[in-house]
Length: 299
Image (cartoon, rainbow, N blue to C red; front, side, top):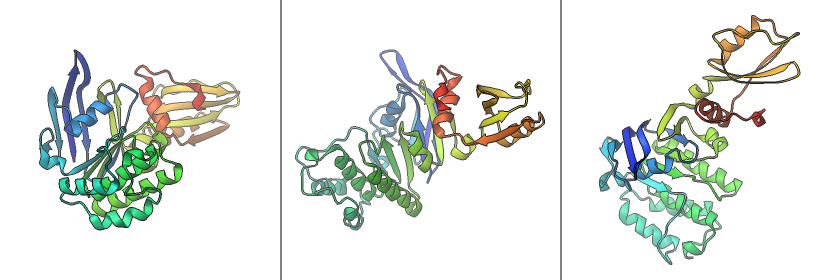
């Protein structure tokens, strides 16, 4: 659905996107993560046709995005910083969206009204709280029946109940219409619950792009204890981090968890246990070898 190949963008000699590549399959929920300054917002502005690239290509559904109204009608975008016309209410914005999106589903709009009981559709949107403005944005965007939904910090400012409700609506839409979702967020715990693919950005490039299951199977978190001191580990072990409390050692090891455990069992430990790694931990350890300091507070 999304193809980004060798994308380059410079601002006053600074290369914000440095030959980056990204591929998002149709029907995927793709989480885009990265530290501040990695280039996520610049990438999104290319995907939405705001910026024109200096090099490379940006395609959605096989077509170039920039200055292509036909492609732009296929996606809906919810930015972190929302914009609405002065004094416009939800009903007026609905009519505006209907004029842009030929697939706008009016029946769905009225059906979803009950999911946003706190929003007065006849009240100026700019007078609503930030959280309610975000609810209006989701309400309108989903009703556009887009083939692609691009979200930038989508549930920031929403309470936990509304967050869950928003994701429930999006997941139902993905299941029903095979909508593709690209979501950029710093809330890695939330992405872990909803995404099936993840791209990790750093310094203008996507360093890692995998399914979440593959990503979680590429790094192991193992707790192990031995009768005496920790023996010398096998040379094949690529240890990203090691800490200990008494005789219990916590190892972060690159590679398949089952294979790592099998090798450690040959050393006859008193205790060995494979612990689940969160997306946040994977993110930190994958970037740990670049220029990030791994913090012991994770343990």
